[in-house]
Image (tube, rainbow over all chains, first blue to last red; front, side, top):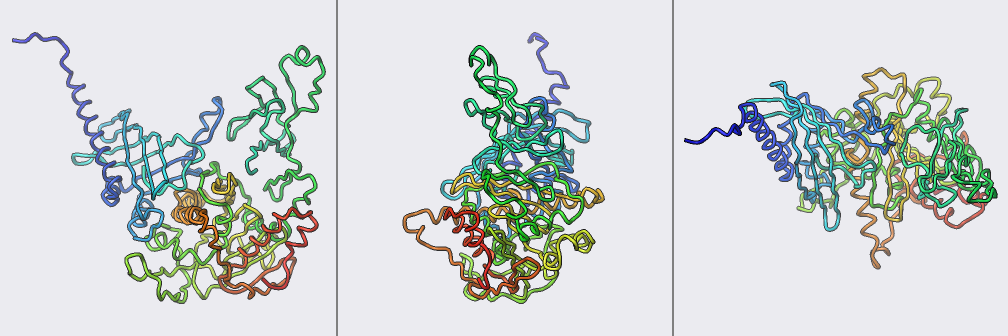
Length: 181
Length: 395
């Protein structure tokens, strides 16, 4: 007979661990789709009402840091609904998307996954990413940043209903953003 | 301005001053934010502090360390020699002898800016897209006049619907002869029919003094890349643009590197960082009186078409970068650009202060840009430069 140490996780903790596991696995699967250029399957992860947004970031003094990122309704790098995202995917698959043929080699590393809000139906999740890209023989881009997602629970998995991508760059130090985050 | 970091500062009397972001003591930056509001500038090296007009106001220990000999009035931030604005577009030059702005712009440069200003009560949408392309700036400028490239460079955008509501339909063009044009797998390259390229496609090229130029289709021959053409029929636009300007549907370039896109109303600055590195800044301007829905639509299109994620500029950047990299070798740098499309066939019509060429797709605007650049590089006087960059009878 073993002594009860009181260290057994509570049911809440177990539920949180399972949720964490589910969210992380969802993100790893998503990253694998992108790195394998399986864009149709990636697109299917988004809800029909999804918004995909990467604001512009500006170097600001500390006292004005609340104005660092542009907001929806202002200019952005990505400001797509699902139809527009689907257009990007169709472009990549057209066989004439010259900036992606030969395709970039990308690796999406997703870390620091934190569920910050969960109302049962939808989760707000923050995560960090490192997207590493090389192209042709000598071109290299490296983007580190964070994402804030709204994940909607669907049958056994999630749908991305909203994604905001925050890059750790102001002047984008690469030629284009022909990949997804 | 090139590699000089310049502070452009609205003054209390609403005028604008521009000055080098370079402390008069050791050259350190006095402002390190990209944009924002400030009441003064502070050099964080030794604490020299300047007013927003660039005047030196405070020097730590000035009496002790400088024996009271330092004249603060002589050590302000270096002002840009001339700063002037035309319709709200602010220009500067480091040359005190340069002609005044309106003269420098001439009718062609002014028309280029009017094609934005005349759209309404224009304001800049917050957020300037900034990114770096590893290309020579001239290939980027060349490209803005190039209406031979869209159907191939942008085939994926046209074919896939990636342009979304910005897709270009409208007037059908005659099929372009594609005999002998094959993909790398040997299949024929099929060419999408678009409203912005083709053989039956009226163009108007405008050539201006000092190298300014406009190239591209006439507004009436454009398919439908411009969502709202109604602004062209307002009294404000008619008065500002005149009969030739009203027909400009293509792209002006204020020499050397300010590209105006007349389709949406954006301005793209190409800032020279090095011979093989160009920083691009996209400004998006919009009529402040547009209904909310139309404003959102225009911003969506602006984000979608140009900029680093823009479905057009992604593929442009690839070409510019490769066209730069592939001409850098000992032998490859001897491969000259072929600029013969329309060469010698451009009859210049001078009317209403503008020099224009009518016809089909040509390289006249590129030729004019390169010609003017070659004159600038000679180090001529302003008078000589004006003469050397005044359009003649033919190009």
